[in-house]
Image 1 (cartoon, one colour):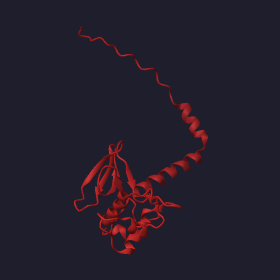
Image 2: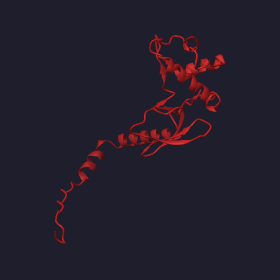
Image 3: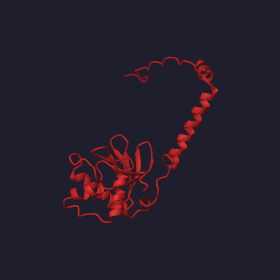
Image 4: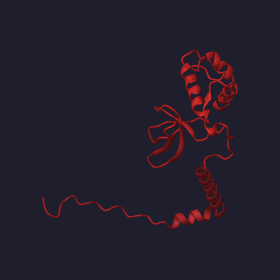
Length: 180
């Protein structure tokens, strides 16, 4: 199950696919039938990647992907208006019943119903650390770090010595040439 790039946005219903990022925020595409594109502001929007979400457990935390796999093996989901505790004990045995609320269970089942028909639900998680752009960026950073280490500290010392110190800025005149 490949949940990479699928995010939940605080304050917005549904799930989104992270398409990219610009100066203003994250570019998201809705996973619903309308495929609406949204730009979520970087400063006040919280994104939660489904790949990283876990559920409180009595011994250890349970990954969301594992819960989705058990729901898929079970084959059906219950009605969201009924009591979900018994069903959730089957698909997430060992979850902390005091910390996992009914709203959390409803959200997880709703997310499963959104994702179950998508092709990414059946594909395997890639071994790469992220999207091709993220991979390329990390490779470039590693190469530049290696290059910097290879040149040694002499290059950085000479670079510091050759920079000029700038003169203080001139004070602006507050009077107008036309007169006041």
